[in-house]
Image (cartoon, rainbow, N blue to C red):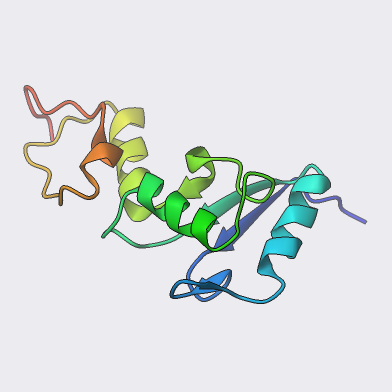
Length: 114
């Protein structure tokens, strides 16, 4: 049997609906961590920052034994940031809301090349 090393888990509709955790979701995620599985939580939201999303999840009961930190959450904004940094791209313009501005920290826009 193949032993899994990681899990990718969607957030909205899988772990929570609105501001309510889905029954069993917190315990299931905790068991993944207890079994030393690397877990990355995914969402396509671009309306809020990763830190705000983490705070919302914390308020639902997803403590640090379930989601260790912001680095475990991948949003569409954080994926874009990582792509820009990995490829040394400097965009001419980023259209972002103040709520996600912190997720673009470190992305250079001087002397644009894309």
